[in-house]
Image (tube, rainbow, N blue to C red; front, side, top):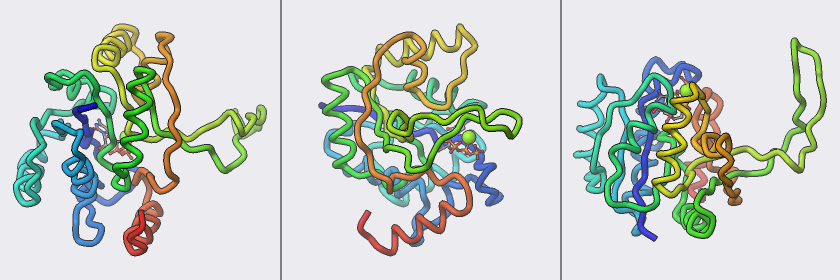
Length: 227
Ligand code: CTP
Ligand code: MG
């Protein structure tokens, strides 16, 4: 099934603390965002990439798209203050596609086989996300005091891409705006209106580059060249 992908890349990377948008950090002399975009550029079922950017970085993104000959980037859309708003702006630019994927620009180790697994589930269920079981013990905490321990088998770390029927995810975003709801991913917007989201087993290597130590791990993945 063909799809378009929205890649939110309009963040400022505060937690990375690199003094710039973390997606311009280079791994093997290639910016993180290019690693990410190349995976979709070379995926046959992807018919268009909608890149969501900070307006002040438009020139930089345009330059990179030209330099790396990314022919599938069909739109460069302005981002919002929060990730959710950036994705919503991207959704409005999707044209002629029944399925849409949303994938963080800062998650460069995604692979074709994971995307294919996700798409297969989305076609059956309408909405799906990659995820991996958590490895740590997870406890709920309030005021530095443990409240309780969550049964580990029921807790998964949610990744991207997430795949949706375009009509469903647009409706979920609109209702979230109406209800002043702000989620940290797009699946949560469907959950709150009672629409099912399926889990597809992802890969522990599909990390989001969030804090400085994630870069050390990313460099090790690149060097092992087996992600
Ligand atoms: N993002 C976006 N628009 C925003 C915020 C985030 O498009 N207003 C994008 C980021 O560029 C990133 C992805 O959403 O690719 C995941 O967000 P996150 O890891 O939180 O990135 P940042 O918001 O840049 O980082 P931080 O929260 O540490 O500032
Ligand atoms: Mg953020």
